[in-house]
Image 1 (cartoon, rainbow, N blue to C red):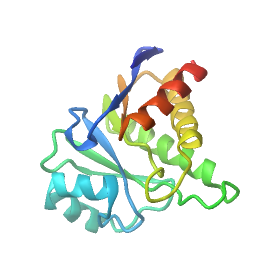
Image 2 (cartoon, rainbow, N blue to C red):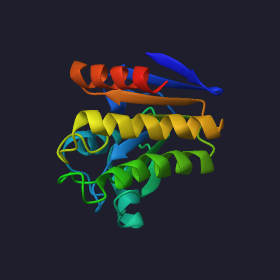
Image 3 (cartoon, rainbow, N blue to C red):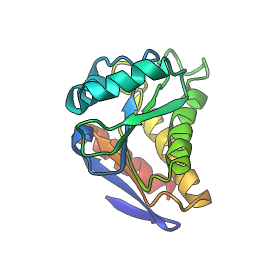
Length: 176
């Protein structure tokens, strides 16, 4: 699914984020930036040791913040690492922290002149964020960003599994 927002395209696909040909992909990282499970582990394995070397130099990344490294062996030139919140009950600033993870990733991409970016569904795996609520935050944040700026030409959400794709597609239809 693709929709036009301002001069940009917002796209939803089901697939593997490590195989994306966008200029940057976003990693749902942990604070230590040392790799882990899920998307984080897959990106580090596919991208090779160069990503980890740069992550070690950076040190840490706080929840809601974003940092950038090379893409290593990936098709993407860059990896933007962001840390989403661990979901407790939605009452511990989780929505704002998740919004910041997307907003800061987009802002970092813009500041580096990156024209295309691919996101996973941040915090919805091991961090337990409910998919419907996370999809709404991810999409609202991205749509608002694209309505205000036109420097990023493509924002793609790469969703793992048909269920996630359907949830995001339904939410896009509600929001635009």
